[in-house]
Length: 239
Image (cartoon, rainbow, N blue to C red; front, side, top):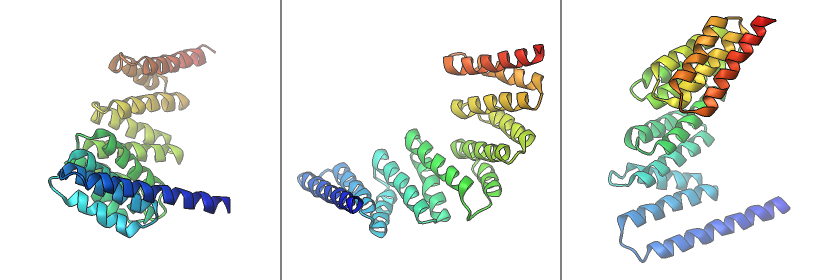
């Protein structure tokens, strides 16, 4: 009963918020204000469980060529979330790639949408995760944000399934192929270092850690992790 009451209270707050937004927007003739109102209406419909209405509103916003980056990216990002909930992989791919191509300047929204999509594929029983992630990495090589994240997710799956050497090879390709993506490149190099150490491949492990120190010299945390890895190998070798 308490759960139902909280849900009803939350829905009432959402409805009041939508009324307030509509009231404020009605006093303005600005297209930007109207776009923001429609975006909030779409998000509100989704919060209220009205998925079909939410999709119609947000798709209309995303299809408007003149819509600003903030609202356009926001609409496409939320559509990706909705289509995942609806288990619609084709639509997820369509709206996510559209977000990345059209609103590449909004890197935060693009990363969030891609990470959500890739994570869903990696865990989805609807597809063969390895094959689908490989497809994304190849099909979207012109969109490094997608290709790199798909490749990294595949490497993580390989490692999780015990294919450590294959994962190491995949991480090395990521580090070499996407050096401008600092987060993924550094994670790939650290993953190589740690996995190679577990396999007794000390030279490769040390080389990978040293590359982190050289390539990301401005990041204290990364340098510390890499130095710790090198120290661990030295201690193991000394025993």
